[in-house]
Image (cartoon, rainbow, N blue to C red; front, top):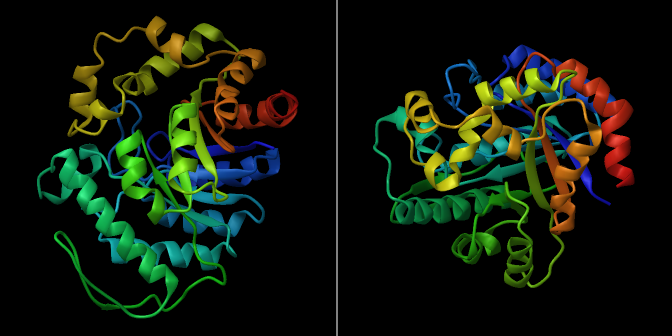
Length: 322
């Protein structure tokens, strides 16, 4: 049975509000919650970018049941992989083994802040592979020393490990990333409902049991036109696609790249308005492609509580019956 999640979108809400939404999402019946991990919003109009790890620490204390996940953290520049492992283990302890570490190769938007330049994709993948090796070894326990092309670790050890090893999910977009990273992770993460990704993942992992976690933006609201306007204002960056989105260095770049994206363009890709059937139709593409988990993003901050009420009473029952 497909599990449905709620996204704690750090770019569009304050940390205090996100903690409140997290508790409400659990009460509404969501199975899991994922958090973005950004230093910058995509667009100035979103207006937020709190520290995901502090927020998630608070979320562990206001929830009891939902699984938690980063969606996704980049361990290649802004964070050293040894520190990511420590943070993940701590959240595993605080959440009583409810945390999964979602990892990806990152975006220039967030990583440029440390002033090291933005490497080409092949170098980023090399760095990501080394980071996965380091994080996995540290989460296994014991002392770890490592000397790679991009990272070094000198006699590191995570002293507070959860009872269960923190699972690792890895964001993939095609055959190359699956081939490179499938054997270093437990679960697949993707933002498009592509059945071939799931099939290639299963082949690469020998069919071992794993979650396939997808994510989809929706913009529920009682007025369809207002919902479309919100989605266009807050989420038109989504139209760029991964290869573009990974390269742009700041909000001005995303504003420029999306200046010709129209509200109609956004509405064609994001279900907007009050129609539960339209949302269900969009979401079900993921389970039909073989995904086991789908996290929903409710676009915009202003209707989060109303969306969660709608999700409890209408959307989640409809999704589970579809």
